[in-house]
Length: 140
Length: 249
Image (cartoon, rainbow over all chains, first blue to last red; front, side, top):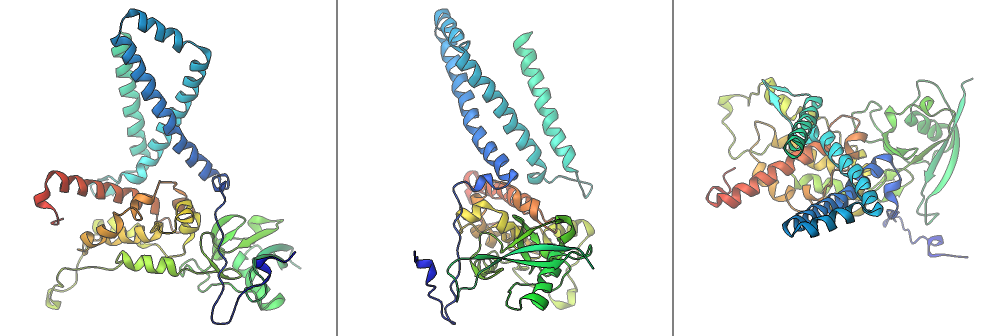
């Protein structure tokens, strides 16, 4: 069957450019794109953790009964599953951004650019130290 | 007799066909031959009608960027033997309109490049008697990486943002703006800010990072864009908290 594409309206002085459109599934085309989309998607799980934290604060600010209710709800297998997936995604989110930090942060010491490994390493170290501090404050 | 390898070349002849088609050619697979050598073999011996851009054969002119097995590559630096036993699919660069065969239309980039003023901007030229504008090795180091850009446009082909929204000014143009912004002799940062800090400028970028991965000259355009986001954000904060100082930067 003839389509419009079979009849190029080309003349010598009016070149007919061929334009492609990006597929909806462009992000499956390269592994880098998939990792990028996963990083973007991980923001949703960050938002979920913020909501979860606000719900916890709300429960604590009520009374013992509300807090126990919240604990019971949190222990539900679906909530636990969602939180485990969220934790994985939040760790992925943090790690990918830490790994990208050297590209955005150019630090020079005595005229020499500090190697990216040190910049990313500094971020990871700060992450560990702050996490340990928070854990110590909560668990002591 | 050398081994042979098959090139699957995407052809587009607008006077004959409404959409690109694939044509296969068998070319010798010498170990020192690159994809561009294969294409030149086709042009010289098999099909003189095949159209593609090339010039220097040594990764400096930036003309021979194409898509090789789905990856944006300089065909002068992509060896046939690395893809043995083949076949090798050679397509025009993605995200650009195709004029003919492997030749894409790059006018959009050329217009955007001029917008960011990729040259030394001076408020006032110093008199000749004062001599050259001298720089220390450290000052050179500040921008040298970005000055390696050869405008091959592999970064545009790898950038999904540019593919989805062609108004995005794009990786190479921003990296080249930064090449002058970080130059100690330049005074054009304020003029470039207006172009770069709009949505189609740096803020269109979501840091996919593929531009940096495909860059054959290690320019790191993604890094250049993120660094400029910081510059623009600091500038905005300064203007917000200290409006009296605006325009002095």
